[in-house]
Every structure is written in structure tokens, then in C-alpha cells.
Length: 178
Image (cartoon, rainbow, N blue to C red; front, side, top):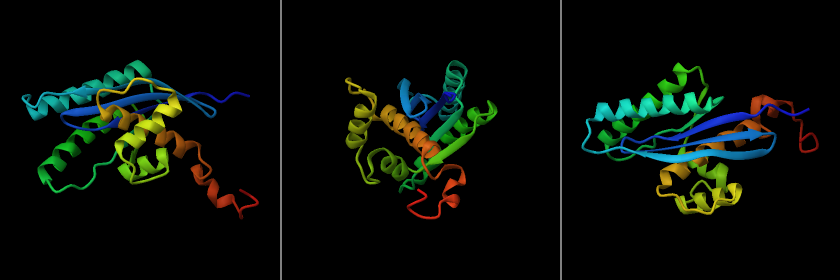
């Protein structure tokens, strides 16, 4: 009996550069359907950029019909204004997914890195190398924001397909049961 495939839209939010990726999973195999970044002009009005982010996420949802939406949670930086803008970009992306009825999950940057590389302190190059191996990619992407989005989608897949999903960890009585 073959399991139904699942599509996951991963987003690395940003107001000047937003990475996005769509993967499809079936059983234990993963296929990348799209990976790119949307570059926005700093000369554009901030609200106009938010509208463009929302429109792009809606377009990706219409095109790929994802079952799940995974996004990177904002990390706490020193610049409050940057955090506010990043939070707004994340918010409009989440709103687009919710409007389409797609479940949303947030992951911290550390969780994404740990899930993909095994090291929560991995740098972007280490994450890229692991993704390159998983998907047999040859071409280095123009922006690491796109690979970050791919890593977010892969992290979500691992969280959905791991042994601790759906509360199954409560049923395990020890290593023998695992």
C-alpha cells in the first residue's frame, strides 16, 4: 500500500529577500519541486513589499497546492526595527497559508540546522552541503535564503516522519519498543 504524497512549502521570510522552496515527499523519498528567492527593492515602500510577499506566497500555493506550510521563526536580534519588519513579512506569509487552509508550523533557525545537519550551530555552507547531498544538487544557488527555505521544508518533513511525531513517543516503553 503506497502512502499519499505530501507537499511542503518552506519559507525563509525577509523584507528584502525571501527564500522559498517546495518539496514533495512519498514514503521516505523527498523530491525538490522548486527552490528560489524573491528579491525586493529597498526603494519600494515597506507595505508594497509586504503585499508582494503575500502575492508570491498565494501564487506558490495556487501552483503547487501544498499540504503543509513551514516557516522560520524570527530570531531575536539587536535591531528592534528589523525584527518588526521581519515579523510583518512572516505574518503576511503565514496569513496567505492560513487563508488557503494550510497548516502552519514555525521552526527556530537552530532547530532547522540541527534537523538537517545534526548540528544546531551549523553555518549556511554546511546546511547547503547537506541539502546538496540529499537532493543531488550541483548548482550553487544565488542566495542562501533559498537553501534556508529548502532546509525549513526538509526539517518539517523530518519532524512529520520521525519516530516522535503524533505523540507516538508516549507509546514507547523503552529501547526495545523503539
